[in-house]
Image (cartoon, rainbow, N blue to C red; front, side, top):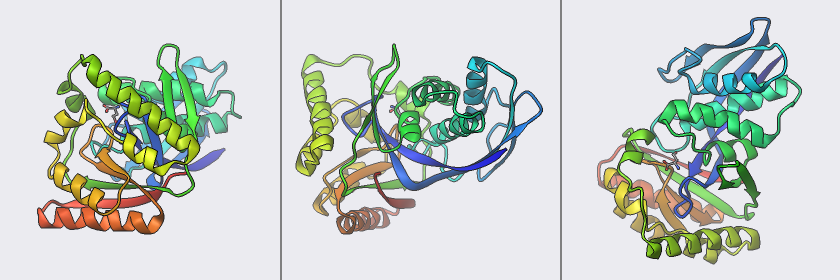
Length: 298
Ligand code: HSE
């Protein structure tokens, strides 16, 4: 009655899909062990790698499991151990990995009473503890894998999207922390019709590109005229990294989630490595400490 799982990091927004689009990264993530116990409820036994609250109400994994147990018809108890490898405030869904991983594992141990969509709803309660907002664009891809679209929040409607076979994501993380709650405060609540038209054109273009494996269309659609101009100011060397990645052959480049990580998408693994090298080189020249990952999107 114990399960050990990998909890993937995720890129939310993907430029044109603020709060609705996300993708899961292969090989970047946390590890978690979840155990069934006789003790009702949930206890966070141990967290290695980061200093995070163990109180289940204040812990994102704990809060997500409590939401699940609230909806569960029966008695059950769980212990959780997390090896936290994704840094909080890095922009690749650190809190989502814990929230999504915990409810996924608990559901397995209970014999899968809940659907993926229900698990997303429970995991969103963890996100609420982390940032004050129950956004689903990180937890949905963490649970479904690949690309996901949150078509609607009320009612919750998640659509799994296909990933073109040769699509890779590169993520570079400048070693600063930006809390999602803070980076949501700087964005504006209203947008112009003109900007809306650009954004939903791109979002539909990106989704069409994923279905038709049209890499150029995916590239053309990776634009953000609403959030990126504001949030990028908080990210060291953002314009230089973007220019370097595009010059190295990236399809597109933008802010990963609420930052400070920057992502690029690329066709083929060799090109992705070139893009990663160009981004790396840029931060080395600017004297910015970073780490960088290349992942296949599955
Ligand atoms: N859509 C959220 C935001 C993702 O950009 O604030 C946070 O990871």
